[in-house]
Amino acid sequence: MKKQISILALAAAGLFSSCSKFMDRQPLSQIAPDQYFNNENELKFYLNSLYSIFPNAEGVYNEDIDNVVKQSLGDNITGRRTVPLTGGNWTWGELRKINFFLDNYNRVMPESQAARYAGVAKFFRAYFYFDKVQRFGDVPWYSHVVLQNDQAMLTKARAPRKLVVDSIIADLDYAIANINETSTSTEMVTQYTAMALLSRVCLFEGTWKKYRGETGWEALLTKAAAVSEQLMNSGKYKIYNSTPGKAYLELFASIAPVKDEIILARNFSNELSVWHNVNYYTITSSYGKPGLDKQLVNSYLMADGTRFTDISRYDTITFYSETQNRDPRLSQTIRTPGYARIGTTNPLVPDFGASVTGYQLIKFVTDMSFDSYNRSINSMPIFRYAEVLLNFAEAKAELGTLTQADIDKSIKLLRDRVGMPNLNLAAANASPDQYMGGQYPAVAGANKGVILEIRRERRIELVMESYRWNDLMRWKSGQSLVRQFKGMYFPGVGQYDLDRNGKIDVYIYEGTKPTPVAGVQYFKLGTEIDLENGAAGGNVIINRSTTKTFDEERDYLQPIPIQERQLNTNLTQNPKWVDGL
Image (cartoon, rainbow, N blue to C red; front, side):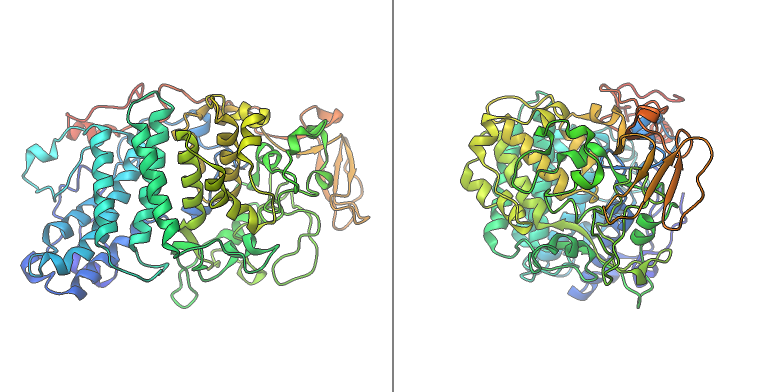
């Protein structure tokens, strides 16, 4: 348990301590409410400390589910997760801070003056609880600070998921109605941030219910579509497209958040000595050699809007050919022939020393001046307008109310940015993509085709932004994680010119290593690179011998730690999680 420190002292540092056990049974602070919360500056000062609840940069870009593959696989894919003794994301310190504010914010000021600040606090409470619902399902709902001697509250049972979600929605409705910030600051929570979160919450919970046969999903998806459209109609945001052909790449490499599209971001700075590690993560071998999985690469459409996977023998097309005439987001997400680092003209091929699949990441990568360990400072998006457009289209598609006009004001804007043809509703439903259908067998009905296309769009547009796990969970698609992960295709051992500039880039060999030539990457078959069919070639295989397991009755929710249930015997465990296993 972390040492408790005075809130007032921590507020001066812009931080708060957080206790991980049992609703922070130690006193949160020594601050006396009658000596604080006396004016708007004190309210603002306190609220500023709550922003630490948002994910750090690694929490955004470090997506290693089935979009991004690494040398080793996480426990959530291998099935090796166990019930933790304590911790395990069952932490409540942030909620106590939020409720402390909400219990005291209007002690002096009238509600009409202080409500805008309560709206921000309720946004944070909704954000906190939404994270808990996604992880654990039913959780205790606390709307006030739990006192140290309040045994009834300290031993409260888990509330039904519906009650918690309804409470999250009520908090966000309040935030939207009362936060009167009219700017589009990317650093502060506004009513538009609350709209974006409400869109996310209702889409998640609506699809969670739909794909589990539970009632009430229609109302949630209707609200998701409505609040998304409310934000869309506000005119406050648009899809950034200042540099045709580069805008998608530039959006994520920008040091300052692009206010056209970014609703809320986490910022970094040399001046404040606050950095992250995305360049180093993508160009070295130190972080598992991340690379896109072959299935995702296959999912990118051709530049004319047709399906790559409809091409005869698409699965045996080599790197140069498979990257030609594709959705431009592919070449703005990974190294493709002709790629050069920002600020240079020197073309670079994929480096297998930094990417286990060969599909080397460039999204979020900035110029070489930020390549040293922990020196990147480009902003990280927490909410961006593109997600809201995708939420709107998906909610209406799942409801069966999506029209071509709806697509034209949502999906089309994302495709316009990269010069891709628009999604055609009638054509998608008339001929659902079998390749996509194989990934999501639960999708059925008259709108199957367009739902699959929106899922394709979402995966491609939001890759590396850490949406994928929660998307698979809400769609009840955990089995997507147990397939074999793959990389580039090579017909067999031999020499390969990846960008067809007349120089050999990769040499896969058997036996004795050839005499090295500068600039060539050498890999011994079977020890340094694994091809699907050995010397006969195939895709690079990642973790061939690692067993992947996803228990459909257990793994959609996380386990509640042992110690928490010992302290509060009214807490029940999630299904099929067994202590000690």
